[in-house]
Length: 367
Image (cartoon, rainbow, N blue to C red; front, side, top):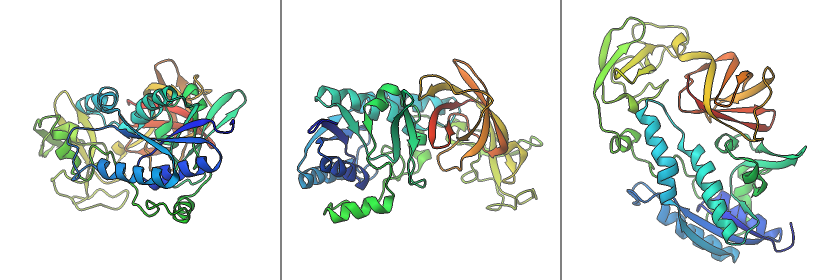
């Protein structure tokens, strides 16, 4: 860094991005804050906190003595992220829009805008790390494993990482709040945001029904084909789902036991016939998979990892790293085999591959 080099920090209104800006300012960067508005439909205080978030960003900017700019990326978000979100659900898959929001908005539209402002780099309050090692940029897990967000960042490429700094890479959440409190930032104790802003705290099914009309169909037992009930649309359900089926069964049975009163779980979706198939018991074999195929691959290094090496992978964010082997990979798909069966591997979700602390990339689960 040259003294006074300009960096644009994405400010969300939360404590993490505020502390990221604070740390960079203390290091001598010329810090500019940028607040991104990514959603306009149904933008009300009832479900979306963007108005309060903006007020918090302006307050942080005033406290730190940095310029703050507000930019509207709602059009880009709708075209690049939300449109795909709806297509995936309509096809019976369960997408993760946060992954594509990062790669398409926060580290593409945001980066392009920052460069136009004369910045050399951008920064965010994500819990992740980046380093230049053996002639390439690497995406790393954060020191705070409970907050690590590399899963959501795995589609970042070399160009994006070369321009990115993650100031919180070595910090724990408790330290971030302590730093904010010591600096007199009013967001020090602000509750972390959860979920996607355009969904907010509302029931997810109600939100989705506004864009994907109901289409009633049958709920059947995968084991014997029995008709058990009716659903409003397979798009509203995901593999492994237990709640909201309204077909009886207790909250959960003991693993390995499949009695008459065990809970039912979604195990398969037949989109063409509009049938939802369910099974009883959390550990039913239909809910377990020892391999998967992924598409729409994105590798951080710009090339796929070696096959037949031992890696770890996650098929969902809140999951422990699972040892696996990359059996095959080509330009369009890859096949991963796990050492132990994984529960409810869900098409549309991202599988992310790691080698120790290094995030190698991943793809969308298709089978």
